Image (cartoon, rainbow, N blue to C red):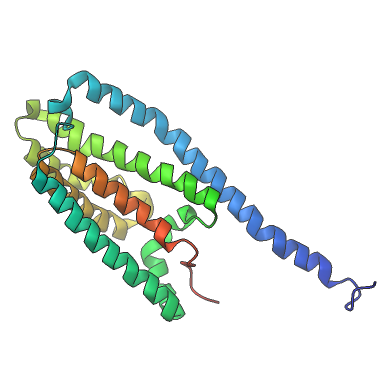
Length: 217
């Protein structure tokens, strides 16, 4: 049976259907590439941590105060993410300012279950790797590990600059998060609570899954 529009609309519908699938495929490939890129560095950091031992690597058993601090920070994170979700649902125009805040992570924003699964690996890898370096190994190796807290705080600017690809504003906010992670590690006398909090921070993006971060048309 002929198309009511003479067949002119069918190719357009086909292109529209193919477009989102192409974007999803590209994002999944990108996320898989991030996993592959992070894996060797994480293995190297884990090897060094094993070689120097739990005391120097910061992977000793954590004090309860560290877990309390990590739990309180995670609770604040859950509240903030819920507020963002509510704003996205009730006030689509507010996506404009949310998009500016989250623009740097838009390529990571998972839209399918496959992408969410791969992103989960990315988030856990990043939490482990960055905390092993900034709250574990470097504070334990610099100055012989005698001033772990001071070194951890001094590394906060470097931690922020390490996220400069996300923009100048994100360097500042990431630096503030780095200071929070340093204090959580100090409270627990271990990098373990900071690792857990960092992973939770990165995994929060999954809670925004399905909510467009760009402005509504």
